[in-house]
Each structure stands twice: as C-alpha cells, then as structure tokens.
Image (cartoon, rainbow, N blue to C red; front, side):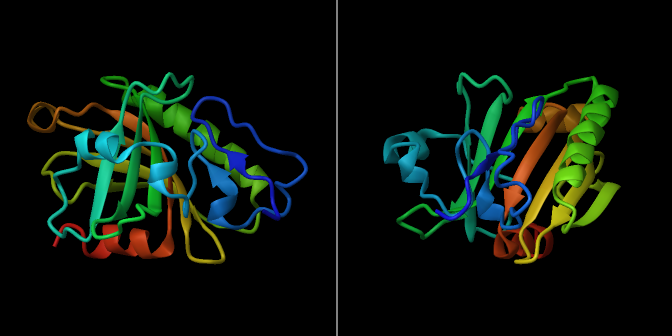
Length: 197
C-alpha cells in the first residue's frame, strides 16, 4: 500500500501527518478500520452479516446495507456497510459510522460543522458542498443536513445530520443522528438517483 490509511472518527479526527498531504483517494480513509474496497468478510463472518439488520427503505435492490452494533467503539454507536447484493466477496461500496443525537439535533449540527471544517483544512483539493438541507426521499417529514466532499475519482466523503419525525422513529426504529460516510462513485450515484425509484 503506497499511502498509510487515515481514520475518520466522529468526535476526534485522527490523521497520519506523513500521508494526509497526498491523500485524495477514498481508499485512503477508514471508519473503524474499514475502508472502501475491503471485503466485509475481513471484519465479520457470513453468519454475522446474515443476521445483521438490513435497510428496508430502498426500492431498488442492487445494493444491501447491513448495520452492526455493539462495536465497543469510542466514536460510533453503529456502522453501516453497503455492498452489491450478488457480490459473493462482499466488497464494500459504502461505509458509514453513526452517532446518536436523538432529540438534540442542534448539537448534531454543531458537531457536523466542526468535523467538516477539520476535513476541509486537510483535503484542500476536494470539491466541497456544505450544509445542504434536503428532504429524505422515503419520508414526508424527515430531513438531512449534508456536508460532503467529492474527490478526483468521483467518490464522496460526507458528514450528515438526520432529523426524523415521530412516526418515522416509531416505524423504522431510528433516531436523530450524525453520520460520517465514505461512498464509491457508483454507489453514491445509485443512492441518489436509483435507490428509491
């Protein structure tokens, strides 16, 4: 590996000073030691993957997103990992770390800005979009405040705060949260343009 991988954490960002000036590839980042292009089988057994909760909001079924809890993580309450449904190697196309901010969305926005501002100082070649408020496609009331950066290869790193209404929280057993995400170009395109159609 030509570059030392970097770890993005929600509360404390830890970077290798020897390599951050060169890092412009999504595979140079890790969330809890997991990166785009890795095999999920390097971290979890097939049985653990099978038993993990799966996202049910997507209408298109090309990708599967599995959620893992009980991580003993200092930074995250859960990890979401996305891979192609028919991929027997479980190559990771998207990985996100989530931190609960239930009923405390203002604190989520504050932390989101802190994290993204730190990312901007380190990765000046990325194209940034900040604090873009959007409705969530599968909900009438939920919103996401997005800050993300696009890299030369078309991949994305983002920090988002999700605010859900009472009905969504009850129906999907979800909470308001902040998420740090890494997506390949292909997976991000699917998520934005195909997943909910």
